[in-house]
Length: 56
Length: 362
Image (cartoon, rainbow over all chains, first blue to last red; front, side):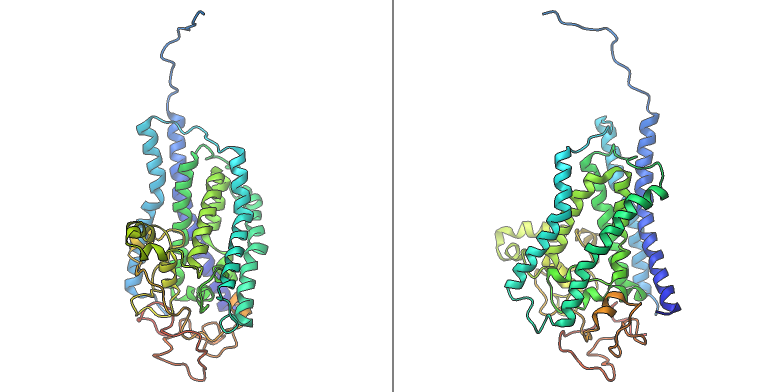
């Protein structure tokens, strides 16, 4: 294995990293956005504060 | 050696489309939540179901592959002429490597390295519902493998890392994992899926891996399970869907064909692993419902197993081989330009596996 082989291997690893990081970035950004949107949504309030109990 | 301009153009076009496809499951999930008013609260799979998937993914697939190997062996695939000492050693070393080295390394990556790279993000997306997680990982994992595979065919300097997988003159489960060690260890989709598991999509990933292993092992197998779907007219509609959705023996055998000019073989495409759908979308597919008469590389002369497994660390002693120290990056068709001083092994016929007629040996 010589210097050119090492450089080839390095190039291959970089291509592999790019193929991995790009989809990971797209998916995590999407999921993160959903999570943030969810977190920023106001909590749903109960429609009524009246307690209902049923007598037997 | 440069990439053909037309190929380069198609890569850029298809990569752009892929960005959209990667985002599609997440976007659809969000739209569904909005329409249904559903909030993605945690929806974990039961512990028993997860344990079953874990066990099946760990041991079941290996047992399934071995069983398939026994059936192929009994049906006479591994005869001495075709599967001699060098070929046997190449297949066995490549079969053992992922089990003995890759799996522990990926476990180390997931359990030790990812917490260092992404501290505090463990299970941050565990709220993703199981079936949406399945959809996300199916697309992410398999589309990434499609690109990894396609680029090793279409970028000339990457080809030799993938050549070992195509040098076998036969199809069978023994050659499904027949890969150069550097091709295997840097499989992009493994690390992508590991990262998604770390982020909380573990149970979905287990099911995807199980389904994917079965489809890809069967697509490489000499047992042509899809044949009845083409034979009986009543099954043709099912065949139409199947062959466009997943990799079948017919479409994947075509990818391993020794020739691409007979209307059956198509080693310039059919790159899909679990899903053939990527080939349909990107126009790299060829469906013939037939099986090639010969497999492998026309100019293959049985390079030593260590060169096939560990090139470029070890080089082939076969003169003129793509894996030899002074060998070409991509060798020309054996029929068009026979290399001087080389002997024909007679193992395969047809043109060299490569990148189309535009490429000649460097």
